Image (cartoon, rainbow, N blue to C red; front, side):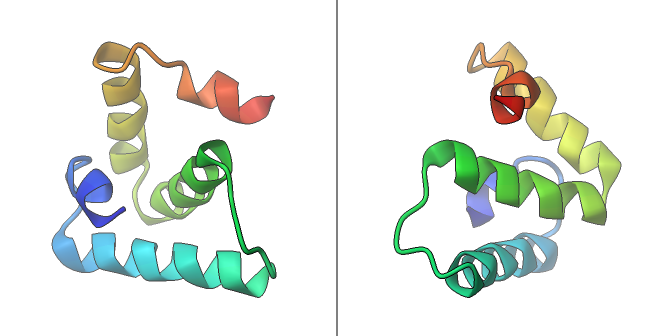
Length: 76
């Protein structure tokens, strides 16, 4: 998680914070398992609150490199 968030341009302290908050949310929701889509959605939610540009960087990277439409996939 931390490395993925770092790739958006976020500093290491923010990347770690988002990772901790993500794990905390999963724990607080009482989940033992989450899907990749759920995990991405949680991370992106926190990332967007921190910095809209970093959020957009994630979306652009997914579209350009991974050939994914992440925002559309998360809406399903």
